[in-house]
Amino acid sequence: MTLRFDHRVAVVTGAGRGLGRAYAQLLAARGAKVVVNDPGGSLTGGGNDPGPAHSVVDEILTAGGQAVANTDTVATAEGGQAVIDTALEAYGRIDILIHNAGIVRRGALRDMTYEDFDAVLDVHLRGAFHVVRPAFPPMCDAGYGRVVLTSSIGGLYGNHGVANYAAAKAGILGLCNVVALEGAAHGVTCNAIVPGAVTRMAEGLDMSAYPPMGPELVAPVVGWLTHENCSVTGEVYVAIAGRVARVAVSESPGVYRPEWTIEEVDANIDAIRDMSAPVSFPVVPDGHGAHIRYSFDRAAPRVGTS
Ligand code: NAD
Image (cartoon, rainbow, N blue to C red; front, side, top):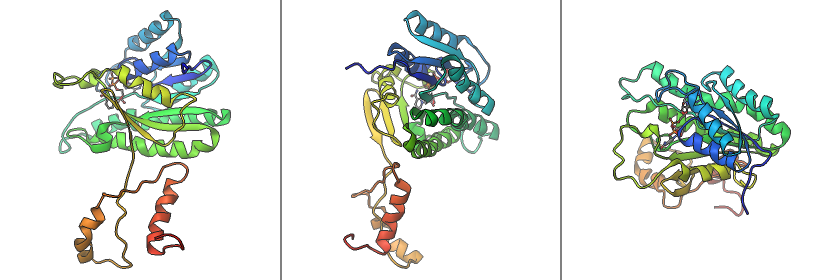
């Protein structure tokens, strides 16, 4: 059965180009009313151009879909509020929020300016809060919501020259977990996408050996995460060059001792690091508590546990 979004209202930040454009077009083609947000700046965040947001709206309308443009920045609280207000004013509700907006400012850590660090956090991480914060109450009040935040391979594993971007993209996973936890009782899910696609963010890279990796290989995964059928929350999904996979935090079981010295850490480091039987704790319903209980059980095993 075709999975559709009739009567659903979606906000996609940074939807004037690249991945966001693909998400907006896919949801609109399946019946969603879409707010296409994009101030249309440069890759590093400079300037404004209403053209990209409006041309995506025009494409959607021409194809028979429904969409409105918003050109506010997500980098400020006022801008984020205005993005969400556009959905509430134009369509009276918000069911889906995809925070996808992004900029890149590269620089080696030893040279990175505070301005470049802040500018990247403002769009990716604070930008996520600036749109989640006003969208979350109406979603909870309506008893339904689908939030997707955008992380990155750089957020999971780092990369050279992007301390700002890596920190922001890792921080987004922390926010995602809490949205999932606090939304669970209200029918609101939140998951993160780790996309890989050839967009303007790939400018300057040698892509001659890359397999096909357009945004259309990522959009269906984000589409499912924003659909009623989405049965997961507090999770992280990779979509790159046709590979779709789940990412999870895992821990080694570790070593328990009632007392430790530096020498005993030294003697046990291989066993401490041994990931051959990893444990992981799903965020929802209570990964935080499960982690603590697992750790405490090592100190004082309850009857029936080891
Ligand atoms: P892109 O540059 O093509 O699109 C990003 C869009 O965000 C642009 O249209 C831009 O104008 C918009 N934007 C920038 N600042 C904004 C702001 N303050 N408010 C609202 N919109 C703003 O890049 P993309 O590759 O499509 O990236 C989309 C998202 O995916 C980003 O969060 C990016 O970090 C992430 N990502 C992309 C890749 C990849 O391989 N392309 C990999 C990992 C993560």
